[in-house]
Length: 180
Image (cartoon, rainbow, N blue to C red; front, side):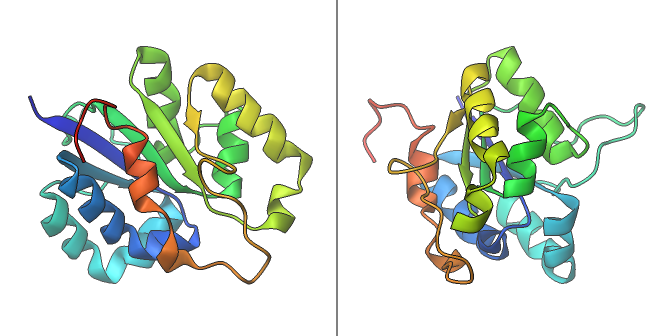
């Protein structure tokens, strides 16, 4: 059986290197479908074909029209990474105004395993909405990889997007009995 991972990337620094995340997931045996927020898609616009070639699937960043058939296979699991502070707080408040939030916010209530690993700085993390949003997502069953077992916010202007822990994020969705 093919395991299908929807890798959903927001416009946070590591999205510039989302191809690294795709490769990590593929090496772990996932068939990866990529979904980008509209802002993250704009970052990749000149090179979008690279992502299509890498995944073998169209890259989605917009909702499909009602009469359009979905171009992606059904997801076995979903990983929202990197998850921006904006996406965290919108999702935590139940606002699904992009396909990148709408798909996982529905999937977690349909029994699909969903994990999310944020990437933002300590100043953004100090916003009171962050703790509420993390709690709201965890309460719904989202595995939020935030803090010591996930991503710990970095000092402002001192992030290292290339060093994003893709392996840790992907491993969160792998069966524990699977040999890496």
